[in-house]
Image (tube, rainbow, N blue to C red; front, top):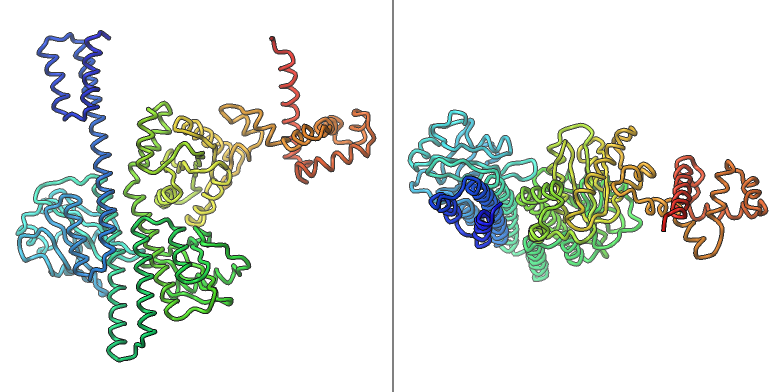
Length: 636
């Protein structure tokens, strides 16, 4: 490349660094053509300009996503205020309109009889929409509620692929609307209504826009439930005061109850961790609190709960979800359901320091709702950040040579520190659809502070940790019960830094392949579990690590105490497992060999003579001897 060509490409880079508009970059190519640049120079510059367009487009998408996430966080804080339902719905519609620059936004609510109506509307120019009955039969909103997924049309009135109703179409014509999107207000397995966005021009909604609107709708559904709870609590207090049955002590308890609930709700939407929320709830209830997932596994705990009757807790959890209320157990233990609509998110297990009052039980219910809110927000945030996080892991897997500073900036924005050890787990569900596993993995990776991607029908997780086997077993233990069928996992690591992720991923994939070849589907395999097979599969063939993991305690014992356990172990295997013949080879008494073998059993475990471990011990001994022989003959 000539100096002028380099200068042209350098000019493109300088404009990119200055965040100059695309028109200025395009102008470089026009100027070069006017100046009569050579064809080769023009081709080089045209390629540089094309790459610059790609970089700018990627940067703009990243900024848009960051802005959307920031707006969602602001919205979450807004929704913590104690609104009545109408005020809350106006805030939701206004936020939707501003967040995605809609001309109009509105919310419909579903009644218990299945009919729906428009409760509030923002940006309308007529009085036809707010309060309108949506009637029966299919429509854009009813389709979104039924499918529990977004439904949209870029040009609604001219789109025959979506259902139409005369009354709704009349409002659309009167408002001059073209593009319309409806997303469900989901609460567990139920739907409260739908959130709509509309434009007065043709508009094709992007996946990012749809994802942001879905996250907003999930937050809105949760806030609607909280507003309904607030209204019920106010009505109860008002009713008690009206009949004169509230003493000062009762009012104090009610106020304390409400203060605790408000504090927990604020913690949820201020971004508190689940462990912090559990600790605050435990302090408010004066006890030890544990949060468990739907499978009964602890997600976090304020403290340990020893001597717990797990069978009784399992039965109480089922009863709590059936009755949708806390269930007491002997010993001042309570089990409270954590639910969102009809969806089971887990349970709270509380061991109180004293018998609970009615107000304490109500506070336990409110604490369970706060935990459910936090889990839903984490899920919504994971979904909103999902494309950004998935894209980052794809880059780490595909391009280990990727610019380190660029990766550091992206990981910093997502709160991920690749300087600490991370392992890679490749999980393959053995049956069923992958969709449910993918949804779970996004939430799980976000909760653990890691990343997720999907490749070749497998879920790839990059998670903090140094024990690949333990992390993989934890993934399998949580995902398998959720799917109802086994999950095979291959794991490798740890890796430090962005450059090591791709190599560790390749090793994890090879471990999963080896697990399949060995007819171990549904199990977990890492280099450590695979033993000498892991040594063969490893990219760096770390002989030292294999020897240390197999006979390291014996080597260390010999080194520190000047004993001959390693030589005894070698002689024992060379003699076909005969202590007598080993003693002859070592020129010691057979009792000496027997005592040494007892010490070896203490160091390596009682299973050291079983075939699988014995094979690896012999392999380690042979590798150690072969390496020593090769080093002895090494040319100086």
